[in-house]
Length: 173
Image (tube, rainbow, N blue to C red; front, top):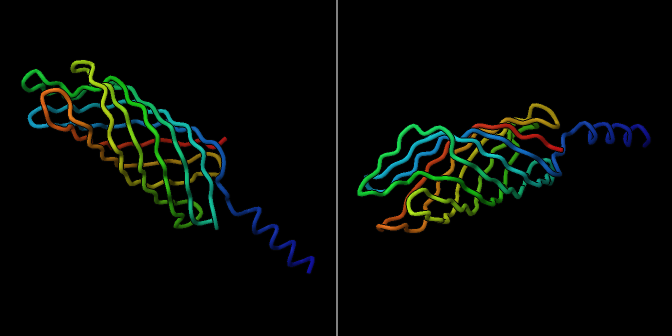
């Protein structure tokens, strides 16, 4: 009985359990478009979240994030309408599934608020995304993700849509 308990303890203590607070940093490529207006750019994003794992397979996190726009690749203005963002703030829920101890697939569902340069428009959107996370060890992970957002109407009519590709790191505290 003692040997079985010892083996069970070693097995459970060697199995990674990712729970607690984490910090994230990523680089995002954004494509925002509406009619003939479009913006493309690359910028940084910082996030803080709290995660938990159940049954060593299922993951759930809540995350708060913020980003500012950095390098602008393209800003096509049509009819005086620019979709250049100044900054974004948001909150997401991230359920996931561990394929093994290192690779996790996840989806993201949240709400994002973005301040656009055009007329100081401040709009919100629902955010949906999919991603993969590769755990390097118990503290560090790499993430790759695709997100889609559709904003409320802004001045001049129409709802801007955003596609975002991001690559980043996560550090669990």
